[in-house]
Amino acid sequence: MLTNKSTRGPSMRIASYASEKISLLLSGILTLELLPFHLALSYNRPVLQPYTMWNPSAITFANVNSVGSSPFDIFVNTNNTLYVASQANNRVLVWPQWSTWPIQYLSRNLSSPYSLFVTTAGEIYIDSASSTGRIDRWAPKASSGVPVLYLCSKCNDLFVDTQDILYCSMQNRHQIVSKALKTNSNAFAIVAGTGSAGYAANMLNHPWGIFVDTNSDLYVADQYNNRIKLFRSGQLNGITVAGSTSINLTISLWCPTGVALDFDGYLFIVDTCNHRIVGSDSSGFRCVVGCTNTAGSNTNQLYYPKSMSFDSYGNIFVTDTSNSRIQKFIRLNNSRVPSYNQPKFCSDASWNPNATTFANATNGAIGPSPYGIFITINNTIYVADQSKYRIQTWSNGSATPSQSIYSSLMNSYSLFVTTNGDIFVDNGYYNRRVDKRTTMTNTSVPVMYINSSCYGLFVDLTDVVYCSIYSYHQVVKRWVNDISTTVTVVAGT
Image (tube, rainbow, N blue to C red; front, side, top):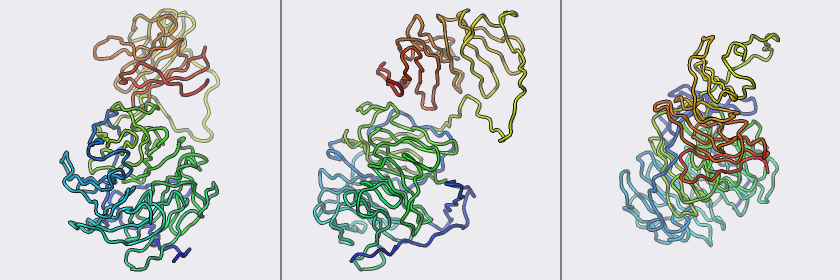
C-alpha cells in the first residue's frame, strides 16, 4: 500500500533546552532545534566548540579481515557500541566499547546489508534483503530478525526518529519513505522525492544518507545533485543547505553520501567523491578529515568513504569503503582559532581616506618594495621585507620594529603566521620552496616545494598550506604533515 500522506511526527519548535543554544539559521528564518532533558537519543550528537580539530591521521579500527570488502554503513550508540553493515559478508558486526574485535555477528537471512540503525531500546533495524528490499528488526540478543517493511528496493540508509518513525533512503527510486513502527501495516509514506531523478526542490537524484532531527526535519545527502537537502516536517519541497545552489555560501560537494548533526545542529557531511569529511560551525564550513583532496590509503586519506558516526567523545568513525576499513579520527582537546583578524563591520562602515605612514624605507624600518604583510589577532605585524632578505615584526602598539628575522630568504613575496607563532614564508624565487620558521626553535624547515614564488600564502586550521603561484596562474596546496612532498593544484590550469 502506498500513500502520499506523511507519517512523520509533529513539528516541535520550542521546548526546554539544556544549553539554550540556537542551532541553525537558514534563509533568514531562525530555527530552534531543541533537545529536551527527557529526550533520549540512541546516537551521539557531541557538543563541539568552534574550530574543533581532529587528528588528521586516523587509527584503523577494523580492516577487510573483519568487515569484508567495501563496508557501507556504520552506527555508534551512546554507549559507544559500534555496529557495521558488512554487505560483502552478509552480516552486521558489533563491537562494544574498548573492544578491538567484534563480539557479535548478525547474519541469519541477511543478504548484502547496506544500512542499519540502532534504537535506544537496543533494537537493530537492518536493510536485509538485496532482492526484496526487506527491513528486519533484531531485538536485543535475538538470533534472527523480524520483517517490518517490504519496499522492493534497497535502503541505502535507515533512520528511526524520536517518534518511532522509520525512514528509508532509496537511491534507485530517488525517494525517501517512512513508516510508523507502532503500526503493523506495511503501508509507507513518501516524505521526499518524486520517484524520478531531478534537480527541482521536490526532487532527488540517487539520495543516500539521511538524518532526522528532533524537530522531525529530514536532511538528505542528495548524492548526484551534489547537495544536502533539508525537508521540513511535512514538506515535500526541500531547501538546499549545503553544496550546489545552497541558499547561503557553504562548500562545494561531490557525491555526498552521509550527513550528521552535532549538538548545536551544525552539519557534518561525508563528501564521498572528494574523499573527505566536511563540517560546519559558527564560522562556516571547512574540511575536517581527509583533507588531502586525493584518494589514498595513508592514515590521513580516505577512498570513497560512505558514512560516518560520532562516538560520545566526539571522535569520528568513517566507513572508508574503497579501502575496506573503518577509520577512527580522534578529536583533539585543543580547539584552534584563526590567527588572523575577521572584524565585523556595520553596513555603513567607513575609513579615513588619508592614511598614516606606519613604516617606510626612509626611516630604515623596511627596504624598498615590501610585499607581504600579516597582522595577528594580537595585532603583531609581520612584513616580508623582500629587498633586505628578512621578516620585520612590530609588537602591538610599537612604532619601531621589535624583531628582525633573517634567514635564507631571497625575494620573499608573502608570509603567514599561525596561532602558535610559526611563520610560513615564501622562499620560491631562487630556492623554489615555502619555509616554516618554528617559534620554539628559531629554525626553518621546507614545507612545500614549488616552481616559482608564492605571491600569496595561507595556512588553514588543518595545517594545509596554500600557495598562489603568479607565474603559473595556479593555486597549489600541501598538508604540512603529509609524507609525500607532492603538491595538489586546487585552482587554475
